[in-house]
Length: 127
Image 1 (cartoon, rainbow, N blue to C red):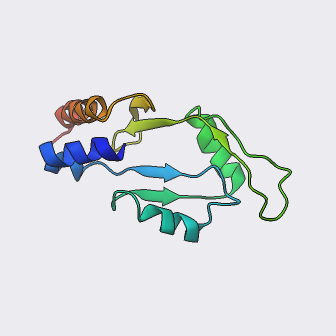
Image 2: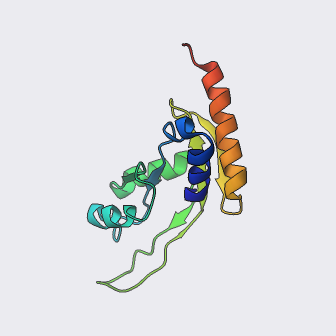
């Protein structure tokens, strides 16, 4: 996603400003707000990083059909893996679903699609 955003930034800087990536963790045990803040330093600066209680995360995951499994038998600092689907969802400013991209989508494909979807969405705007 970050590579696609960089392409949009170079080719359509005004559109880049309209895109606000949002990351929602499903691993509340490890992904504390402090750790997310540190992790965020490696990504685009306009990205929003969210966490919350497990019930609310489960509701959001269900709404967007995100499947994940976090082990519940972890003790202390024991390492563990979190299995989860990997999709990027593109929503309009009213949080209506526009498109999704799997991990196999190329940055060029994603960037072209993002620009196309923004063009379509802007055409629906009442100016």
